[in-house]
Length: 259
Ligand code: COA
Image (tube, rainbow, N blue to C red; front, side, top):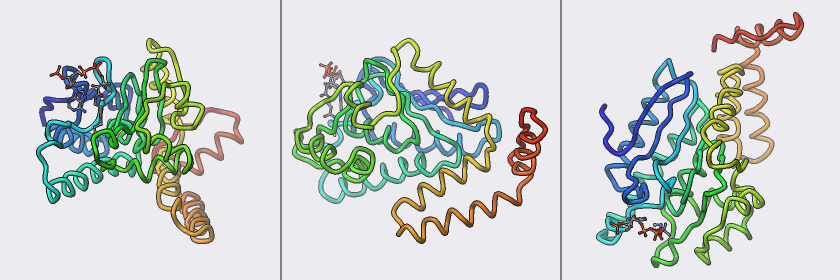
C-alpha cells in the first residue's frame, strides 16, 4: 500500500519505518496507527526483509497518542482505541524478525510505549522519555503500565507513571529503559550496525529466541524452561544448526539459509 504518514524503505534486508508526521511531533492518530500495523505486517511478510528499524522524522520519535482525538473519545471508543493500538504494538513485539526502535527525540506516552514494544531500543543523546498520561487525567493505553515495570522494575516504573516526568537519554539508559545511547548523528548507523550483526546470525535461531522470551516471560519458570528445551531440540533439526556447527569446526564464516 502507499503510506501517507510514514515511510517504508528496504535496504540491506532492513525495513526502515520512519513515522512521518513531524508537524504534530509524530503523534499517533488513528490513521497513523493503522499505517504502522500495515507496515509491520509488510515487513514481517516480505522475504527481502530480515529486520525492522523504527524511527521518527524531525525532532520527535513519537510524542504520544494524538490528544486531539483522545479529547473526543467516550469510554467505549477509548477502550477500543487502546485495544486496536495494543494489537498493533504486539505485532512489533511478536515479530520473528528483530524490531529496533531508534529513538531520535521525544518518546512520550504512546511513543515510549511503541519503543518498549520493540525488541531493542537505541537512543540519541537528544531523546526524551516519559509517560505523561496522568497530566491529562488518563492512564496509559498502549501497554506502559505492564511493559515499563517489566523493563525498569516496579518502583522506577511507578515513579515515571505517577509523576508524568520526562527523563533524558542518560537516565533512560541508567534505569534500563534503553540499551544504548549514541550521539544523534550516529543513531541510524549504530542501529543499522546492530541489526546487521543480528542479520548475520541464524534467522531461525533469532526468531526462536524472540519467541522463547515473549512466550516464556510470564510463565512459571518450569514451564518456561520446558519451552526453551523444546526450541533447543527443534532447532537441532535445522540446516542452519548443521551449518553453524560445521562452520565453527571448520573455522570459517557461516552461511545461514533460514531453514
Ligand atoms: N497529540 C497531538 N498533537 C501533539 C502531540 C500529541 N501527543 N504532541 C505534540 N503535538 C503537536 C502540538 O499540538 C503542536 O501542534 P500545533 O503546532 O498545531 O500547535 C505540535 O505538535 C508541536 O508541539 P509543541 O507543543 O508546540 O512543541 P514543544 O516543543 O513546545 O513541546 C512537547 C513538545 C512534546 C513537550 C509537547 O508537544 C507535549 O507535551 N506533547 C504532548 C505529550 C503527551 O502528553 N503525550 C501523551 C499523550 S497520551
